[in-house]
Image (cartoon, rainbow, N blue to C red; front, top):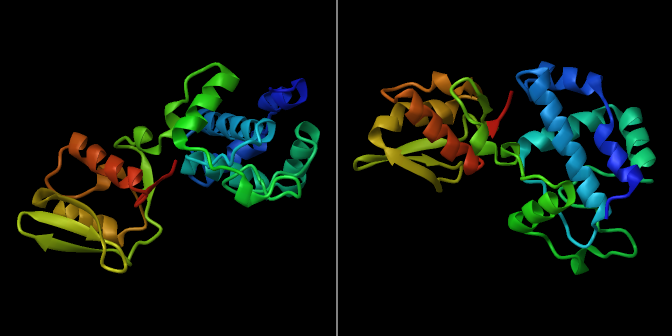
Length: 220
């Protein structure tokens, strides 16, 4: 059950954080930054009021908002102690490794369990921001943390994007070959910049797959 103190965390304002999220290209606008921060607060509330599970972080963008909040060390520490009575470490869980909750005895919640618990606690559907691939548009900036390490391989009428170890990550029609070669070597770009003969809709669809497979990360 959400206590009044924990619920008050959802109304906490941090304009300095929203400004930083835009500056660091985590969000394109302050409105979008506000949405990410709102979801980060909800995640923190959920993990602190229900410690029966390890609640994984399912959105790289919400996680980025949380991470940048932590960089304001004093303000983040004050936020945690005010609303939760303790410092909440940045980890993809509800920090179950405290003495009375051994990590090995705490079950890890599935995404479906997270979604259901979120909707039960907050009385609304889980927003699309928790599904990173659903936020992909032609004007969305995406990041490849393994740029220069990925390679491509042509196989008949298909092209494969390969991991640094040579493992196939995704396969597509040959028309996507220039786009996947571009992805393999480029650290950050807008979806509209994917080269080749793809339509705008096809660029978005390809980027959605790459984001869903955690090959690319959505940015601002």
